[in-house]
Length: 198
Image (cartoon, rainbow, N blue to C red; front, side, top):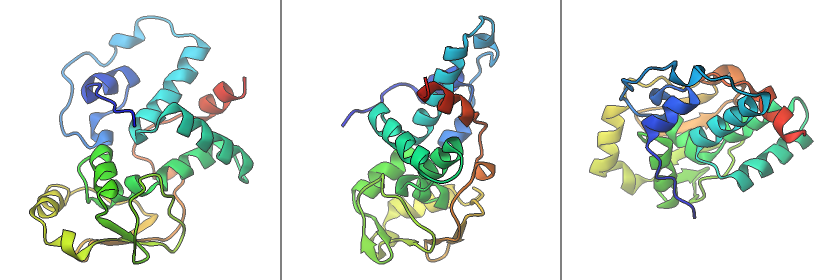
């Protein structure tokens, strides 16, 4: 599996997103308008939007394109469907629950088998949750020092409205599928649709 070793702050600055979206509490000291000096082509803008989504969710190109093809076949707008698919990934749900510091960490925790979906162990980060699914932390994992530290650190993080999170029992129920309005970052998904439609 490919590993992204690019510095998070550097990538956030290039893509114009806040490091807080990635779960990193640091802020960059560099000029946020540095990349806006040169004129960017239409293709450049479309590519940047695609790279932004791929970077936030930690998805490789082949998998991202596969998600786009699924989104096109679904009812509704392809761009909105793509965001719903990415947000409903298990590693993202774990991050949104506040049981990991970053999406990269949540991906690793899922692979190590710390989470249950409807009482069954799931160790696939790309597993897509559905409405009514209950995601919970395994009983053995609840006692670990690592998770106690994570829960203390992420206590102030706001949880999305599409998840019903029980912080005491470390469980969450999917009330509805996520939509664009639930996101904590700006994205112009129509540019991604235009890019893949060429």
